Length: 171
Image (cartoon, rainbow, N blue to C red; front, side):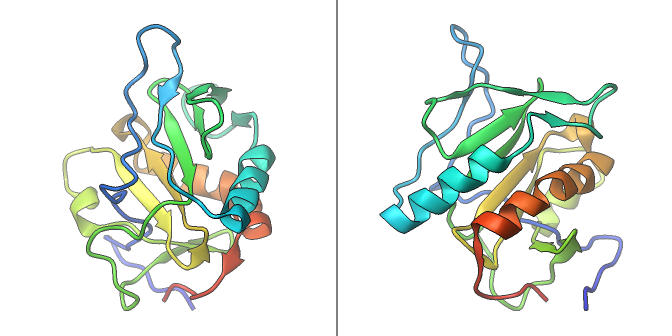
């Protein structure tokens, strides 16, 4: 059973150790992302996830968002649009998260979002599938929030469910 409220936690601020950077590289036009250190099993799961993600996020922006390159190209991350919506695999637990936090279930995946991301001002919001290994984050720029968060989470839920392992269901 999923609990929700006006400020339902759906995902979390990406941990400082991940540091997905949404700045667009001046030369390549690719979205810069950090590469986490993964063991072979996590790497295989993340590769499977990234390969299964859609080429287009249909329900974001005016006409949907097309997938764009990430830098480095072999990162366990994917991005769509400008400003970019970014999925990263193999992320750390969000700062301040504990297993008693509430999550929002979207298409079968429990996402945690830090209350600090849900202020009155539109801000970039990070949703984290904290109960899965490897963990997955979804960063949604303010331009697409609030509807873009749930739309993007729904579009990536299937690949998350197929590629990662549920180890601790969100509450």
